[in-house]
Amino acid sequence: MRMVLSWLLGIGGLVAVGFGVTRPWFEGRRGTELPVADLFGGVTRDTASLLTSLAAPIAVAGLVSLYGLLLSRGLARVGGVLLVAVSLGWVAQAREVVSLGSLESGVWNTVCGSLLVLVGAATARRS
Image 1 (cartoon, rainbow, N blue to C red):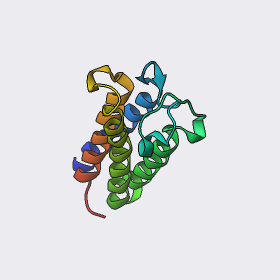
Image 2 (image 1 turned 45 degrees about the vertical axis):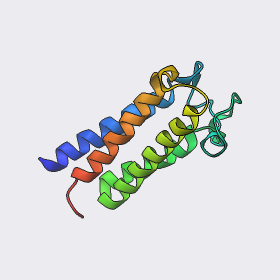
Image 3 (image 1 turned 180 degrees about the vertical axis):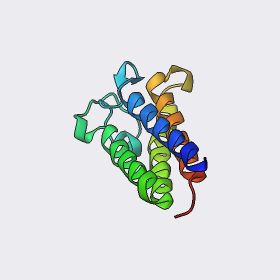
């Protein structure tokens, strides 16, 4: 039962993260359009291609999480922590430019999905 709950939380979180990346985050721009450099240098109004956007580190962390859910709780936790770090790191940078109330649904879908993945990894059995 515990593994089923872990899987449901993890897969549900990954679906929410994937959905969130394709939704608007800030000023109508989706996560696939926001540069990964915004994580380190503050949020700008620049746009990025898919490979240089926030979607790239989120996709890598999501794949690590999925692989971890299949084989290793430790990897699932690492992937969950990476997802939370990327999404909350961007929110922290965005807070310097705009109020949290002006962030759009994609950010919150990604943050909540990341937290679900982390909770799912924490509830998995040791392996």
